[in-house]
Amino acid sequence: MSISIPNQPTDARSRLHSHFDTNPSYHNERWSQLWDAGDFLPWDRGGPNPALVDTLSQRQDLLGDSNIIDKTTGAKRRKRALVPGCGKGYDVLLLASFGYDAYGLEVSASAVEMAEKVAKEKGNEYEIRHEEVGRGTVRYIVGDFFKDEWLKEIKVEGKFELIYDYTFLCALPPSMRPAWALRTAQLLALSLHSNLICLEFPTYKAPSTGGPPFGLSPSVYTEHLSHPGKEIPYDEDGNVREDAPGGTREGGLERVAHWQPERTHEIGKGTDWVSIWRHR
Image (cartoon, rainbow, N blue to C red; front, side, top):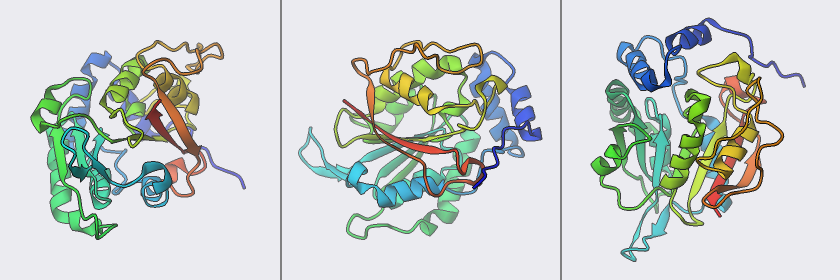
């Protein structure tokens, strides 16, 4: 079977490149500008990725239940799930339908307003998956993933038992990958019941073509998440070099599963990967 690799420049991609052709310190502002205008959101697919749906419904052997016994109180509670760069919040609604207390984080107030509108109008379309568990709560927050103000706002005690990354890492300039890996590891609860789900995208895209979205090979996830906060060597074409550290440094995450999903959004068919990560 032949697979068509959508690696040629498109008008949307060119427009994104032009919009973000500036110092990375201004990128949050640039994302907010797109959300404020609301007429150019090429990353929005109108619903959750089928690969996440299948992972949540078919891989309980990896993810476990959506409830947990709180170590501090000894009481049973729902696991907390975080979706950085949640957009209109489809994945947040999906996670809540599986019983998680789900939080969506965005840098744009306009994006959060759109997500809240979607939740109000279509939230009940996300059917409860387990009647005995019920639906978790949904909350959207405006904030910078790399700062703590939003954590103080939601008053979450502890960390998150599930974090989902699909189009967040690929939206970040490569220079921010060490900080992304470190922050993700810090926010993921130190428990064998806690999981980071990465839907690796766009693996078909050559890193040298720039972004966003920036091309990501599985080795990018492996090296950065195994060595959070560490600078990883890249070659002149933007690929992880063969002399990258390998192994897992203290505080790093370990990949416990890796597969190509049978279902995903059209743009990632045949090239997307799902990986599950935990603290060692």
